[in-house]
Length: 103
Image (cartoon, helix red, strand yellow):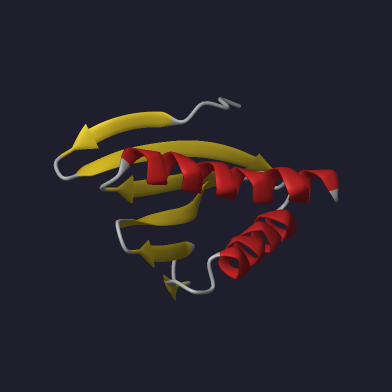
């Protein structure tokens, strides 16, 4: 799986996209729950994945592909401030890495 964050710019937002892989739907759901907890001070919508709105933008995590053994999810973040977007992607991926260690 590609471990790189793709970054583009469409006025006024920097868009950061990253794909992650989970070994089961249960782990994907746990990841969404943990990320939701990390960002519980921000407005959230949990329909169709997880949407989190923050002052300079928003991010959306949703499953892109589901099979019996894996779930591929896409993290799509839009931020007016590039460094803020990079920091948030890193924070989300630290939750992913923590979950991977504990599994």
